[in-house]
Length: 91
Image (cartoon, rainbow, N blue to C red):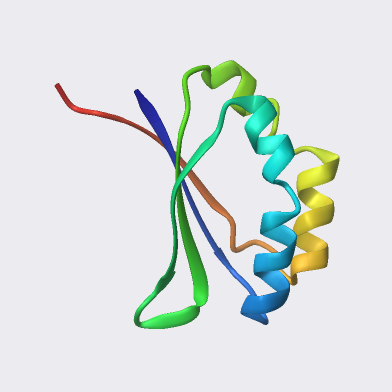
């Protein structure tokens, strides 16, 4: 099963988390399952999120989408800080 790793910086965690959580229904519709929502221990203004999914084409439609870009603005994501990495399990 493939994974999606997101890293992004923000100005305020509570604001970022509210915006992140507001996309739960959209992520669910795309088949994204949240595995972990974490913060970098050496930089608490960076979120590191891991998702699991089945259909990469569905997920790629979400990056970027107007709803996602709006959530980034509302969440105070630092412009240019998004890092999106698609991963696969090694057999």
